[in-house]
Length: 407
Image (cartoon, rainbow, N blue to C red; front, side, top):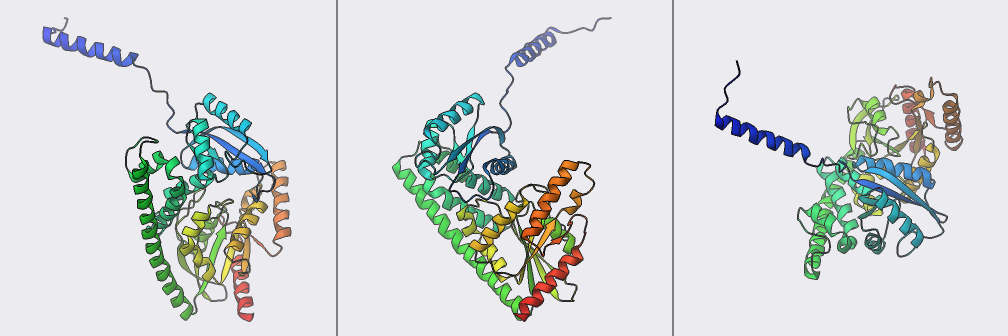
């Protein structure tokens, strides 16, 4: 028997059917979930990059993906010196513009730091936002900071980086400050108000970070008075410092395979093989082309390295540019005045070199290990993940401490 449908129910059914058909005909949103980026790298013949342009762009791509931006293309140019107006040459800018249009890119990311005028000029020509490696690293750090101190340091670095770029980056700042505004919308008075606001926030952040420095100094004085030895883990980002830290002290901190997974320093107690009590600190990883503003902002944290009795430099022996990464760390330590600090080198991840079944890969990894051993002849080969040879590493730390006392 057929079901009875009243006139009202029939009308509602027809209305819902028409609505469903209309919804089905509505165009489907095809916009990708993440912004699309073109990467731009320069092979500067007079540059100070320890990595070649290809390797540097691979690293930049990893950083960009960390902040959920998809890479859809990249461009390179060999330069003696950056172009003062657009960093790369005029013809290369047109090539970037064509590729960005072809790939429907939302942003162009340069692998080197741009001046405010270069950024503004490029945005006027390319008609899309332009950011540089420094901005990407700052965004990664902003996502990683968990403690109040870490957030303060990232905030300070971001404000100091953005202040000279205010007129060319209004959209970014309006989003950062939680206000809605169109690019080029504010007048000169509004811009000056925002400059004053940023300067005020910079001053406030510096005052709060100075308090953090004073507190850290009190802690350092206390440790020194009680004869506590300090061991600080340093190394290139993603070299395995946090994994080593967890293996040594069972801290259980995050140690994922991604850049700058550990931002906020963590310290735990450890007893060395000699019986000497020590404090071990896991510190922020280094990277080439680290923004000057970020290094300055993290001075309170990096001062922990200065107070350390011994540094443990962790290197990834499986990385094809492990030696170059080590050089970048050495250069950063030298810039911080720590080149003469007693250091023990740990060649990490040797477990990954065994049983890969890839003879070419084994040969390449073995060659990289030999290069590292030539440069760091007294290094200790370890596996932080497997716990291999950690006792040898701690014996080396003991030896470095004894040598420092003897001197």
